[in-house]
Length: 357
Image 1 (cartoon, rainbow, N blue to C red):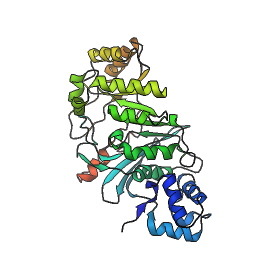
Image 2: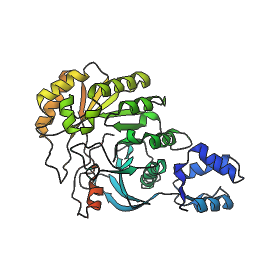
Image 3: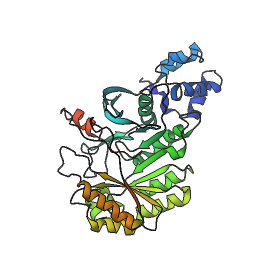
């Protein structure tokens, strides 16, 4: 039988397995410290775990659920991995470096079913959900790219896929990121992005852990959003906004609204005014994202003056708005591009990454 991925086990599940082998329960926390804190690459490196227990782990588990197919490094320090999972499917994840921050962006699905018209991640459809261990596996791979002085400071769940559509596997991963025996990251350093699934937003809020929530809005009304984000036809903007309001009320965390600017589609003064009216009475922050080029698509980003005017219009309505920084402009860092090139056997072109950190 194929071996299980060790990171698919929660702390309680790992403890139960350790006890079932006749070992003391505290060995589970030792194992987790080696995985999430000490960056080991094999079970044999876990020196304070008995050889017998290490051998049992090697018989039953895999430490990593992926292999690196491509590793690209930008001149600004951004690094991107294309990982091949055990079934041959591919996912992408990114490490972004700043002076005092190391942010990782990870995926939750192979492909995507949301159908956003500007995004490369869903052009080949949805293949499957990632398991909890496969979600965490990306973080372990990126963590091992850091120097001994560096540590992951922030995690954004903004890669391939719709995170809340895979909430059953994402929640255990979030808990491991947050737990002191896991990565030990505070909830305010973890951001979950969603196209807006109201019931799942409510489920996330019921964890009573104030993770940051980012809603991918992209339009200020249903008619336009139905064109840009087709899944909206079955959801509707009013329900999304109510779910986001409820999340803020329950967690106290300001909601971020992501808005990809598409030239001639959603970047006019009219849309900026409408968005301002929608958000003026809400504790909100708007991240404006000039669109990344996607080779098969004809959409493009607006000019810098047009983008700046959109920002100023929002601010005139007392809505906090910024334009996302570009990272990894000299590598294939835009979400989904590297996988798309791999799957279609094309030579990948260079597109900039735009991730909020």
